[in-house]
Length: 248
Image (cartoon, rainbow, N blue to C red; front, side, top):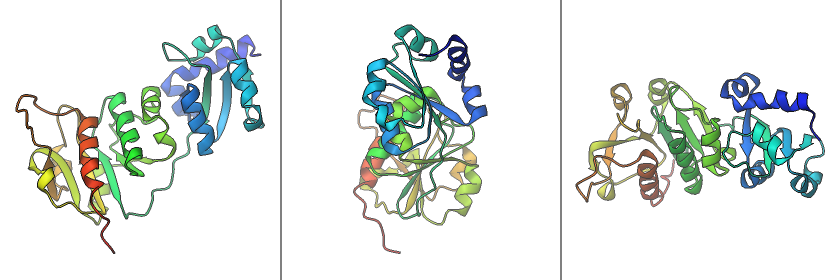
């Protein structure tokens, strides 16, 4: 059981600033909890329904665990409908993989759902490295974490000044731009970086200076002004997935 004082202490982690200060993030729900345990991340605290705790007891030997009621879980959760378990997990940045594949570079992505879906999509296509501008929404935002469906545990997500990062990058840089060449007819190559811009303003002019290949998804319908950032990323990653890695 959890005491009233401990419940009050843990409830502060509904606020992003408290998670940031302590180097933690919140993982909620049965699916995400399973992903966290499978990934080997350091779980600091678990608050869960009795049945869930009993069935996972052997995997939580060194973790601070509390049985909670529905009402107590609601008090801890930022979700409308909490689902059995909530964890506090230590942030564990993964080391960037060797630059032999595709890197997704995100310039000022603001919507948590978009970022979470991009991480999930990158995970699907085997992209293990994402670089975010400092003004992109935090990957530890609860809505982002939830939308990744576990991808956050398998992807190196780093924050960097994009101009500095791209200036040091030694491979082609593709940018998703409305005036770009039709991606379905383009000859793509990897290793490479793929830059996706802000939902409404696209790639910033200063970042565009580092784009060596401007590509676009053709507007066949001719009606919508643009695609959702996460949808555009999925289409482009599907194209890159057909591109063999070039030998060094």
